[in-house]
Structures are given as C-alpha cells and as structure tokens.
Length: 169
Image (cartoon, rainbow, N blue to C red; front, side):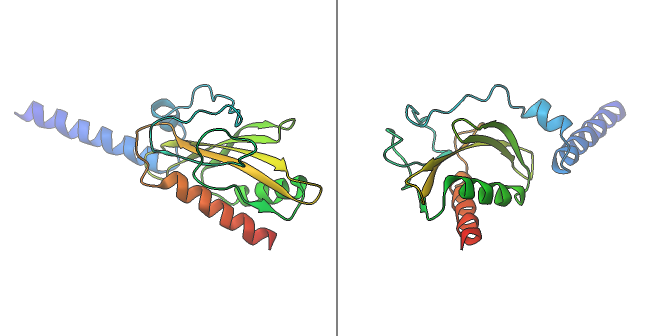
C-alpha cells in the first residue's frame, strides 16, 4: 500500500509540474505535445474548408470560391499601409509567432497558442489591393486540434480587425 501511495504521489507531482511548465509560457513541452509540423500553404482561391466548426474565414468573394463566414472588410488605405498597421497590431498580441512570410503574395502565416495548455491555432492573412487607394484582406483562422473551439477563431479575427480599424482611425 505504501509503495502504491509513493507512486501515486510521484505521478501527481509529475503531472502538476508538466501542467505548470505548459502554463508558464514554456516552449519545450508545448512543442513536444502540441507541436506544429509542416504548415500547408493556403491558396485562398482553391481553399476547401474542413467539416469541423473550429475555423473562421473572411475572404473577398472575388478571391474565394468556398463558403466564407462573412464579407472581408475594405480599408481606405493602400496595401503597404494596411500591412504596416497589421504588423504593429500583431506585435501587441500575446503568444503570436510568425511562421512564414511570403512577400511575393503578401501572405503571412502565424501561430497563436492558447494561454493554458498551449493549443496552437494557425492564422493565415493575405493582403490584397482593391484599387490605388483601398485594400482588403483574406484571413483564415483555424484550430489544429479538436473539433470545437468555443468560438475562439471567430473572436480572434473579430478582435484583430477591430484593433486594426482602431489603428487606422
């Protein structure tokens, strides 16, 4: 009985230490447990959405042929200005890391990890000119694990766009 108790206590301490390491912004366990392998390049023109509800997509109808979750906003600024303000806004967001930046296609892939347990969500943003003085973007936020997301991807996109609009005035 005493031996079982010792093993049980050791297991509980081990689990508690692992949980604390994940919660305290540690990268070692988050990459081992919830690592990101190859991030596929998203082509918004041919994107086919998964059946799972843990994703959110805003895209101009001229670019995306798949079902979107809403209209992409149009901004009264050029693409370079939109990108600069976007980059400044993203720099203020917690636990966001750039995974890939495609300057030719004006597209960026990010990972944002949840505060607790470090679940990764992928976000792909593409900046598009509308005309000489207006621009828009396509944004696709999706969870890598599970089927539900409690509305996190939608909330993220809406919050980021609200912050971007506030920066642009």
